Length: 390
Image 1: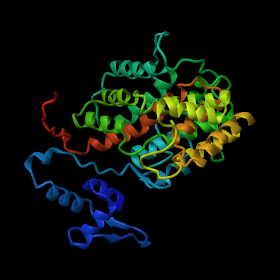
Image 2: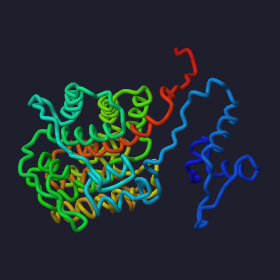
Image 3: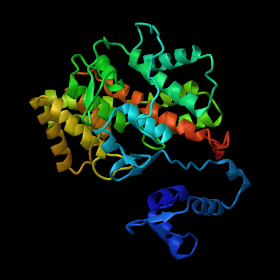
Image 4: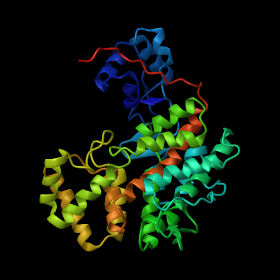
């Protein structure tokens, strides 16, 4: 079943048009058990979409993506029925990944890295892609697409890309979250690579960021992974497709721009920093989101973490930026600002947010990869409108 916003998006219409379809008898709506929202049968929505397109045969190869992995709601992403904001403060990233991959938590295989020696000249983003490529080259059965094998590969890859990052990585602190202690966690290992002096609070914050960013439905990089999966590319090649897209500054790199905004606010004050950013970039990085009308719920969780680990001066800087943006009715802060604030408060480099984002998203990409393997292959085929250009 689809909620109203999902049905409208599938039809390519706005909500008033969707309800007009219902009133005209073109589509049936069904109330949720609590009666608060309407639900629509996915097959009926798709049938109406085909009729609206005139039933042209050329459209039959266009894919309609139905997913049971992540739902986007006003309270943030929901992983297989569990809000990511709750998962972020109750368990490790590994549990969230297992939930995304097979609908369960706590059932997990080993997260052991492939031993690699990345060239010292590579930066973090290049190391991530290099590690995936080299790990794939060393896998003698990389084309084994059985779900158990794909999940095992994903665990191995996450551990591998974290281990391949620059930085000491030694003596990773344990993760303490949800009343439990986890030794050798992904969050602890990652924090030891990206932060100069990670402590328990910082590891907990990094873990929360990993969980919150693990998936966000059909983001552009996720679509790239699903397209690769539809051709039955192995997981390594599919993740490389996602890594290529997330490398863009408007996707995985957005937190780096927000980091610059906060750093300027520290040096110049919030007013000067926001005005200069608007002057040269025409928008404020870290503010506004196409899904959330107000504050991104993921930012709210990260803000609480930043308040715990950040110095008083940095808390005041962030609060000043938020207050001035709210005063001028700028759209609410998003997760990119939360990532930037976390990186700055933890003494991390400016590209640390991109690194955390990318590693986190491997969990969601793998979940969508597994889901796409259940669909008919090569189902993505967009149509172009030919036009001569001057």
